Length: 543
Ligand code: F6P
Image (cartoon, rainbow, N blue to C red; front, side, top):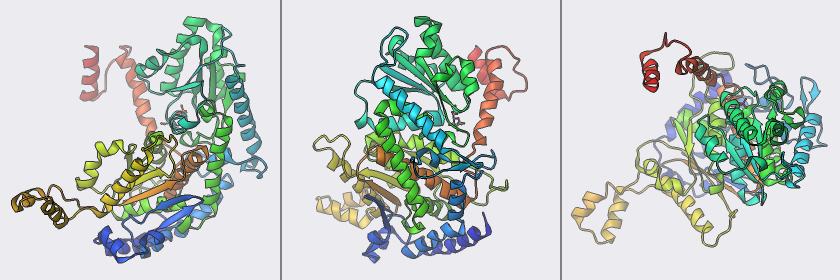
């Protein structure tokens, strides 16, 4: 870390030591103003972080990291298109993808990227109008009823998650499916319910070389060609990629290719043509609102001071939990079925970005970075893993997300959902002491012996930190803002930790080894120089 951050960290260590032993319930008892003091608002959003294990004084110091790490300087470098992804020599300009027309240029290597961005969006809009208007016809003249997006990682998770999140806004007739896994079970089960005549495939891959996507694309092509012949490919396949030469080699008409640019990282690409299946699922007007929400969050992030900056606060609080309280994980708990895939999406965004071992100078890091992110939609998680969070003895910072209004307003559901969300946060904070438990059991009529025997099992330590993010409702605008919030949160953390969040070299090695093992599994190469475990596994498969 930089010397300025190192000295801020040293001061924060003292603050953490002073506060470490104070229970959250005592922090609330000592300060009636804790909630207004430790919460922030943006438009009609509320971020309540008063249940984090931090006092107002330490919070002030924590916000000092913003200047110490020069977050404003890095924001400026991002906005001016500098190569902040230095290990790949690229800018990281996903903010340009939601920059509205008429708001000025965004430069990358001295060149305004906005005309190309808006040109590609217009092409997506036009394509969606053809599909929705039933003007785009398959090889037999029938309209498209089903779209299958084939992609993986950033070319899958964003549009897949957003399509589910915006289920309330879906096009009434067109069905959008997603296939990612190399396991044939993924593609085969999706294709089993579809007709080649009315199916359109989107092959989405930034590089157009990813093994999983290319294999699934080849199998999908075979399925289509067997039924309709080679000439049908141009009416049933479109592609999204930065590598248009490979798209053409695969046999997809360049007219049917949507492009994006190397300054868009895979996990930051849902705003680009990678969002095409989302456009088809919910319509271009909703996609435009999605972009507008992200842009509104960009503006907030660029201008708000640390203490009011929602992405900044989330970033700094996790740094507090990770680097000063020793947390190694965070549970993401959206009380929204529509956001059920958000934990998976954020796993890539956060862990692929900030799971790093060396700093921007290539030196080993002197602090821990991204915690393990996991989670599940509430209330389902309550009946699965919450037991461990309540009584498992581990530090598990929790992040609750709830909406004031339901996206599917069935009577009687939403109030109960909110009650559960807030009750869990309260229980995790407060806990229940042995004495409180004993008093309750006595009041319920238990004997003194029974109370003494059962009270330990029924007591809860509490003091489990949590944040609650309350949105007005889940709609395209708020979803766009929510995803941009997390992108910027990741960026702020990378700045403090002095790492590059935009590369992912760690994923490469496993891919290389898989290519080396494939010919051995296929029996085309000898199994020399393998460790005994890998050799044993391959041998067992062959037998
Ligand atoms: O998992 C590694 C990765 O490179 C991701 O960063 C990316 O989103 C994914 O693979 C898919 O890559 P592509 O879009 O090039 O197929």
